[in-house]
Amino acid sequence: MKNTPLYTLLLTIFIDLVGFSIIIPILPVYSKEIGASNIMVGVIAGSYALMNFLFSPIWGNLSDRIGRKPVILISLFITACSYLLFAFSKTLTLLLISRVIAGIGSANFGAAQAYITDITKPEDRARAFGYVGAAFGLGFIIGPVIGGLILKFWGVSAIGYITMALNLFNLMLALVILK
Image (cartoon, rainbow, N blue to C red; front, side):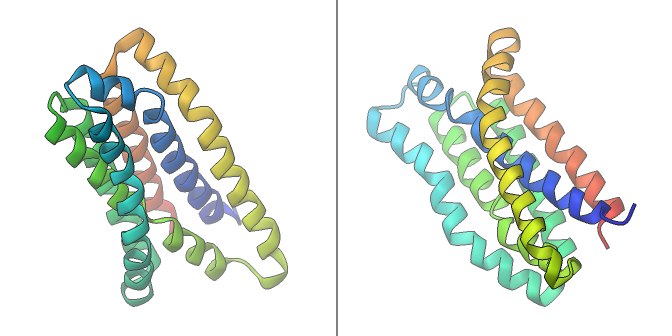
């Protein structure tokens, strides 16, 4: 299929946002359950965004040097590991570390966008980046619903396992399809 790499990158962005937004509604409650103060809830939630902010240019620069695919694969693996750690997070320290690692791993947005720029013709880029916006928005909308359902039926740990599995699936897809 001609646009399979594009679809794989869109799936990467979608899964990153699903993983991020699955956690949003449950993170404050779960953090409080394991003993977080209000300030610590903010630190845990903000750590993801801070790491994303700090590592996005690092991943982008690294993708310019070693290639887009290796950076995307490494970041997907790191993100999958972070969700496995989240599944085991019964202490504030582990929860914080899992969110820091998730922020580092999922900061691959710039590398994914650069890859999309690399594989699309100039006249097709606006449409491709429109799809990026759609993948971003859909992931952000669907994630909390999925998170709520998983929490209701299987508990907090299952959120980590299922999100890890999504990232590993995405990793395998990227490994096979991306050039």
